[in-house]
Image 1 (cartoon, rainbow, N blue to C red):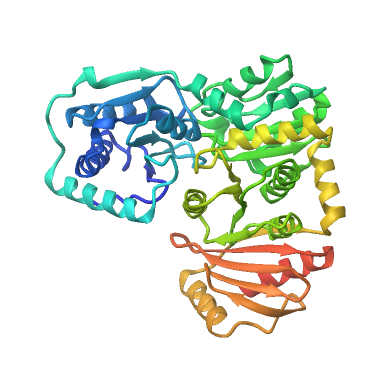
Image 2 (image 1 turned 90 degrees about the horizontal axis):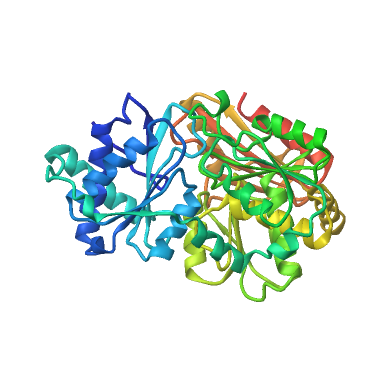
Length: 466
C-alpha cells in the first residue's frame, strides 16, 4: 500500500482507504517529520471539518501525536481550514493537522498538514512527509500509550475574529442596509459568520447552516450549479447579496442581488480594485496562470506589478512569504490578502465583499459592471473535457511542439509553457490547455475580450479534442 501526500495532504474514500489504521500511519509519519525537525515541542494544532466521524479520526491523530510526546492544541468543534491555519500563528505552534477533504464528495475524508508559516505545505515538505509515511508503512506505528496531559482544548474563534478585525473594517460592513444570505453548505463555517454579522445588527439569513455529513446530497463546492438554493433565497428575500463557503471554508462563492453568480475571477477583480483604490500602499497582485488577466490591468493602473504563478495556492503562498502582496488569488475560488496568513480564506473573501458593499453602496453585480465600463469586456469559461489519456497526451505534445498560428479565428501571438500550454491571442484573449494528471480530462481555460471571441474560443476548444 502507498499513501500519496500532496499539498492538500492525503484524501481517500472512508472505509476503503481512509481507515483508522491508515490515519494512524499518516499521523505517525507527520510526528516523525516534526521530531526530526526538532520543532515538535512547540506542539501541533488539530482541527477538523463536519465530515462523518471527524471527531473520532481526530482522536486517532491526537493519540498518535501525544504518544510521540508532541503537545496537541485541539480546536473545539468543526473548524474551517483557514481558522485552523491562523491558530498556528496565534498559538505559535510547529504547524497544524486539519482533517478535511475540502469540497470533495461526502464519502471522502483527508488529512492536511499546514507548516509553521500557516500556508500550504511546499513540495519539499510534502516529499519529506511522504517518505516518512512510507517508512511507517514498512515499520509500524509507535505503540506507546497516548499522553492525555499533552492535550490542550482551545476555542480559537475569538482570536481569529480579533485578527480579522485588523484587516476588515466591520464599521463599513455594519452600514449595510438590507438582507444578507449566507450558505456555509453544511460545513465548518456554519453559524460562526452569521453570528459575527448579527452582532452589529445586520439582517442575516443563513441556509444550510447545520451539520450534515452528506452535504445535502452533493458536493460542498460553492459553484453556480451547487448554489441554486442560495440563488433562490437571495431573489425571494430581495437580499443585497448571497455568500457561500465550501465544506472547510477555504473557498468562496458570491450571488448578486439579481440572482447572478459572480465567478471568482470577477470577485478577485472587484476586491483588487477596491484594495488598491483605498490605501493598500505596498505590494502587487499575484495570480495563477489560469486566473484573469484583468488583475494585470488593475495592477498596472495603480503602477503595481502582477505576478503569474503555476496553478495551486502553494505558489501564491510562497509569493506572499517572499514579499509584500496586496492580494493573491486563483480562479478556483482561493484568496488571501496582505496582513493575513498565506492560506486561502473563503470567510475573509466574503467579508471583503461585504466591506465593499458597505463602503461603496455597490452590490457585487454593480461593482462588476463598473469594472467592465472601466477596463472593457472580460468573460471567462473553464471546459472540463473528457478525452482518453493517449489522445490527451498526443494533443498536449502537439500544442507544445507545433502551436497553432490561429485559434478561434484569432492569431496566436505567443505561447507559454509555465503550466500546460497557454496561447496569447491578438485581441487580448487567451486560452490555457491544462491536462489532469489523474483523470482522462483536459481542462481548457478561456478568457475572452469580446462576446464573439467568447463563443469562438469555446467552439475551438471543444473542437480541439474531437
